[in-house]
Image 1 (cartoon, rainbow, N blue to C red):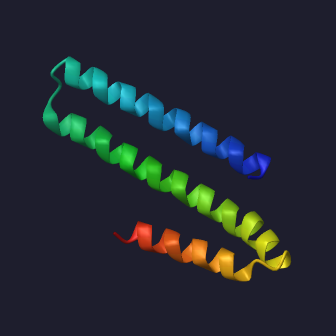
Image 2 (image 1 turned 90 degrees about the vertical axis):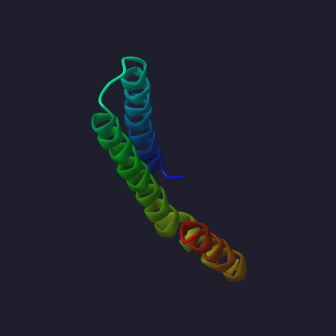
Length: 88
């Protein structure tokens, strides 16, 4: 993983972690369900953004290197596996 992608990923994970702790606090404090759900939706969007950052980094770096190294089949198989997981 490139350093810039790692930094973006870690920042996004910290953001998600903060949101999750906030949701836990809201539940303990018996916050209004709609407010909790709004935060939950925000976490889902943040996770989707995390996945986008990581996938883009993978495509730009790991996939390119894998193809250059002659591992085309492995690279394609991994991408197909990710595609299948994302669409379950």
